[in-house]
Image 1 (cartoon, one colour):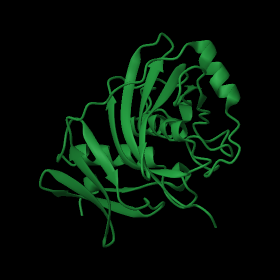
Image 2: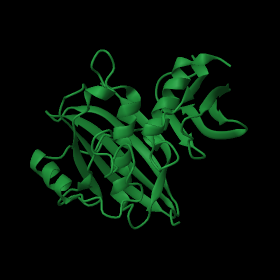
Image 3: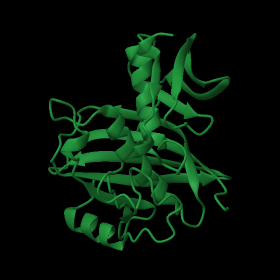
Image 4: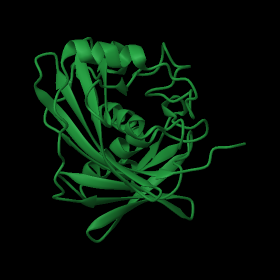
Amino acid sequence: MSAASVLTVAPEFNGPPDSANGGYACGRFAALAEESGHLTGQVAVTLHLPVPLGTPVEYRPAGRRGHVWHGEDVIASVAATAEDVPAPAPVAPDHVQRAEDAFTGAGHPFPGCFVCGTRRPDDGLSLRPGLVEGRAGTVACSWQPSAALAAEDGTVPAEIVWSALDCPGGWTADPVRQPRLLSRMTARITERPVAGGSYVVVGRLEGVEGRMATNATALYDADGRLLAAARAQWIAVDVRS
């Protein structure tokens, strides 16, 4: 088993209580495919099962795609893609502030989520993606990456960017009324943000068909310059106990 093909998601990077945040997992799996020398460039990551925390998973090439295995289960697939990744238009700063103010997190299906959990004000990303006035199906929030999550050069690792692009998309389709989990994600990162910088994440709902919702997200700097974008599909789930 090659060290370049194995990873363990630390428990603090959870989405639901007992599994990884979807965007974080997708970002780690995309990096694993590249680091193993199998796939390079833009990839789509499909999650088949919840990604376990605190236990090793292994990436194995399989022709033109790769699979992530946990024991005898394939939990994710990674494939090269030329899929278009649209970026929702930026949102004016005053509208971003009002959107954040409107986000209460009440009824959050996963309040301990690393990215948008209301119970993670100090050790998570603390994103508050609220609805934007006058733009149906669009959310926005600010983001100031913590130095605790930065690499040695001060930039934010790609998997954290994937994380930040993940959850705001989920809030475009009212996860309180119908909880969903990330199913598939493609991200395009042209520049990684830096710790302590001021950024805005925008999410836009593209459509809902049956149990599946599709959305697009984008990361902008304080000058409205696009740094990254993603397109994702989310599947409805039942989280009742």
